[in-house]
Amino acid sequence: MRLRKVANAKEKLLQSPDLVFLEPQDHKGKWHQLFKNENSIHIEVGMGKGSFITGMAKQHPDINFIGIEVVESVILRAVEKLKEEPLTNVILMCIDASMLTSVFEDGEIDRVYLNFSDPWPKSRHDKRRLTHHNFLKIFNQILIKNGEIHFKTDNQNLFEYSLISMSQFNMLLKYVSLDLHNSDFEGNVMTEYEERFHGLGQRIYRLEAQFR
Amino acid sequence: MRLRKVANAKEKLLQSPDLVFLEPQDHKGKWHQLFKNENSIHIEVGMGKGSFITGMAKQHPDINFIGIEVVESVILRAVEKLKEEPLTNVILMCIDASMLTSVFEDGEIDRVYLNFSDPWPKSRHDKRRLTHHNFLKIFNQILIKNGEIHFKTDNQNLFEYSLISMSQFNMLLKYVSLDLHNSDFEGNVMTEYEERFHGLGQRIYRLEAQFR
Image 1 (cartoon, rainbow over the protein chains, first blue to last red):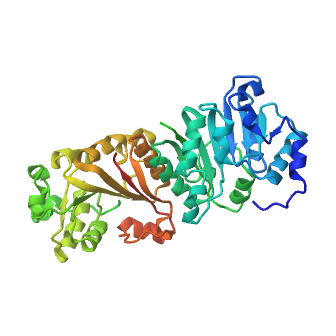
Image 2: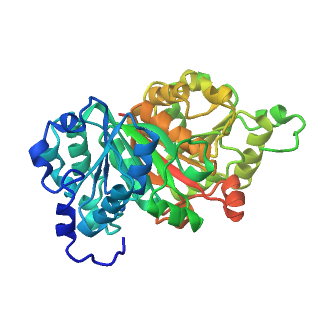
Image 3: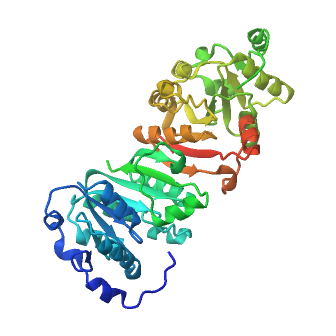
């Protein structure tokens, strides 16, 4: 994602402590208390500017959403959006995906969304891909039993890699579309990337996979 | 496949008893004896006119190939091709895929190829798709332990269906290409269909999946 560097991004994030958590470890195991309900919790890892998570939160008021993004100047855009149009079922946190087990208790999360994750095309960087074995292990730990990952991307190689990686992890494929916008899938909420790449005529790939 | 009906196809096939087996049940468990070696046996289920199996047999003289096709007038084209250019490591048989366990002993086969199988697009016909659970069960029975299916198609819906069906059967995906002819896969042998559809600019999908 190309974005102008935002000056003092961290200071600006600190001004919204109820919306964006910079040290979310303190709430490990207590996220339902924070939302003040027992609704399911879905997280998006790598939320970018937040179009998907806010769109999903509006479409599903009975689900709690947590948007996760490591880049402060990016998450700031989502904060600004949520300040204009507050939603009680969304919070954000600024952490790296490798930190998730420090932030969530085992089984605390009901679903993980991965949207247009960085493909890290060089094979020597495969460990950085969010569908690498190491990250699947983390997601499996924080998810409920038989929890699901919902993943979409325009990157063909990342999608191929992810199908194989998830199969090696013994996950069950429940849904696959090799051309999401020409499929009968309903309720799709587009990300910023998706609007752009779909607009350019790129195919969008999507899958749902369940741990077993 | 659209083909002119060949008159007396069966009679013509009967003239090549060493090449095409109309009642292959008699050789169950004895195919290595027939090939007079202990080389691996690969079968193609739905071989059409035989371009793939003859191309593979030339490329891999140390593997035995068996082409299987239920339509007599179609398999006749492959017979004619093999009469012009004989290959000692190819035989053909004219049976329905549901008959495979009557023809092969458990574990007698080393690999199954499925190429451009009939997609049977209506969901009420899903049991006829060669990647349906019922056929996977048959392939698993006649294949060696950890045997593989290598599958390619231009049909997006069939490929999506097959990924899910194989995952439900707990198969391990070892290779996936969502655009075979723009991938780095080497040694591809084209089928008649593939030449035609690739020529029309259609994407070809390919996977390798292993029973576990």
